[in-house]
Length: 154
Image (cartoon, rainbow, N blue to C red):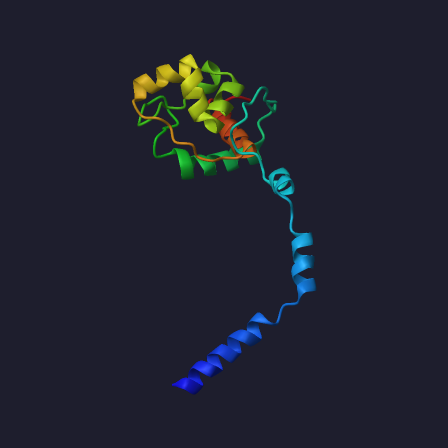
């Protein structure tokens, strides 16, 4: 049993000694700073959307991607007709709401429910807070494009 332990200790010592001090210093020097990591991280939520540039005609690629996101993350609570499921139906939403409001509701649902009177009224009707889906701004824009196509916008 003792020779077995010695062999294990020797193997561990060999593995631990393989890296050099220069390798460790070089690795630390090449590691990105927290600021670089934040700059490279795509923005998802937290900042309010102040303007949305709509496409005419609809961007069909975004419509398809938005539909896929809807089917994966929204379908359980929202119908594409006007029927309320858990959340309100989507039919006509792009005629009732500004694109910025829709984008902010998708990306910043907690802030909207705390500060927006219309969002608070919807919460009173539905009785369930919409969970944050952690979508990027681009994904939210694709969902908006799908909503526009659902409302038969050009």
